[in-house]
Every structure is written in structure tokens, then in C-alpha cells.
Image (cartoon, rainbow, N blue to C red; front, side, top):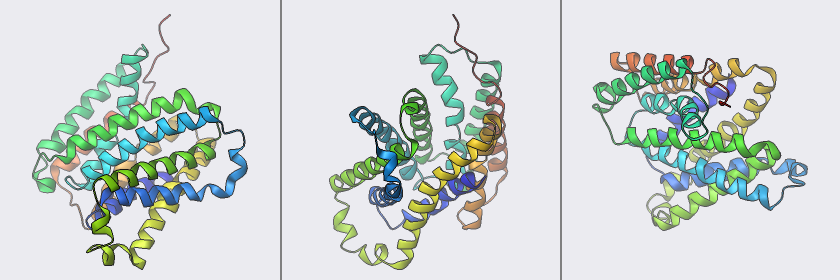
Amino acid sequence: MVTTILWGSTFAVTQTTIAFIPECFYMGIRFGIAGICFFPFYKKFRGFNKHNLKVSCIAALLYWSSNLTQTIGLKYTSVSKAGFLTGLNVIMVPILLAIFFKQKASRNLWIGVILATIGTAVLSFFDTDLTGGFSWGDPLILICALTYAIYIIYLDKHLREMSIIAFSSVQMIFVSLYSFGLSLILNDWGYIFGEGATLIFNIETLLIFLYMGVIATAGSLVFQIYGQRHLSPTKSAIIFALEPVFATIFGILFGIDQLSTALLIGAAFIFAGILISERKTISPPEE
């Protein structure tokens, strides 16, 4: 549950922070700190070979793409909407498995897809209290969910062969490098060390970076691994599905979002779709 709460908090913190810090620079610092946090566990890096490095590099690219589209999307849509749209990755995973890996999808999945689609439509086109209806941040968040679903499938195919700690550290460092690289291309550094310097280089912003890097990113991974060792997959899935709920709560607590009828209805449909789709979503491949 701690992991889910931390994940939920990142939406509001990120939206507040990127109001004065360029998105790519923010991601570079956040994930760089997270990667460094795993360095004390250097013994876990033994046996980390070129193949593992290649897998980490590709996984990091997918993870970076997902976080980048989400971070940019948060500039143009609400925290609550972003949370629930991101949660659709839970449904996208079995759909992609059914399409590309010939795994037969269950009836629960399609019921979940229908409910989630209705909820997405309500949030995107009828929730005028939050973002005036449809916003360009919505498709970016959907791309984020799709990319994260691909990332989950990629990990399932390749992660079992290496240390979680070593992989996580290398992945975070790659994400940080990708972010700083794009930041250079976009010429963010003129603002960062110019007019934005006083907003970025201060104690308050440092604390935000430490929270996002150490606690919300590196820490949440540790809690996730620990929790999944003590909970059944079903219980873990239900708890992780609460992420958009906590995103909404933090959005309201931060004074960013407000409850609306459309938000409640859309969120209810998406949440129901996620939970239903989690119930024996995928059947074994047909012989």
C-alpha cells in the first residue's frame, strides 16, 4: 500500500514542479538520484554482463518514453485525469499479449475494456470542471499508458535473468541520461542557469528532488519488491490499481483538482474496468 500511495503522490508533485522546472531536466535529476541510491548495493552488480546492459538500455528507453509523455501530459491535463488514464496500462497489457503473443483474452478483459473506454470518454470529453473537457494532455497520458504496458511485457520476457537491484540502478541512470540529453537538445540549460536559477537551485526544490528520487522512485521500488513477496498476485494487483485513487486524493489535497460529477463517474468506470480485467484476464496460449 505504501508503494501505491507514493506513486499516487508523484502526479501532484510533478505537476507542481514542472511549472517552473523544464520537464527533461526534472526527470534527469529525479531518476539520476534514484539510480545513485542503489550504488551501496554494489555486490548485486556482479555478473552484470553486456546482454544485461543491452536489456537495461532498451527497458530504460521504454520507461523513459512513458515517463516523458506522462510528465509533459501533466502540464495540460489534471492530476486526477492523468492518474486514471495512466492506470489503463493494466488493461493494455493483456490486450497486447492477446494481439501479439496469441494469448486468448478472457471475457473479463473485454468487459473491463468497455467500462474503461466509457470512463475515459467521460473524463476526456465531459469533465469540464477540470480542464474544460478534452485537453492535449489526455492523448499524451494514453501514450504513456501504452508505452508502460509495452515496458511491462518487455520486462516479463527479459528481467528474470538478472538482479532487480542492478537492473533498476542501471535503468534509472539511463533514463537520467536520456532526459539530460533531450534537455540539451531543447536548450533548457539557458533557462536553468539563467532566469530560472533562483527557482531551481534552492532548499525547497532540493527537498522535492530528494523526495521524488529517493522516496517516491527508489523507495517505492523497494517497497514494491518487499510487498509482492508477502502478498498474492491478486492482492498486489488490486492494491496497485489504487494508484489513480491516491493521485486524485493528492490532487485535491494540493488544491490542484476538485471533485466533479464527471470525475467521479469516469473514475468509477475506469476503476471498475481495471479491477474486472484483473480477474483471470489471460488464458494460456492455445496449442
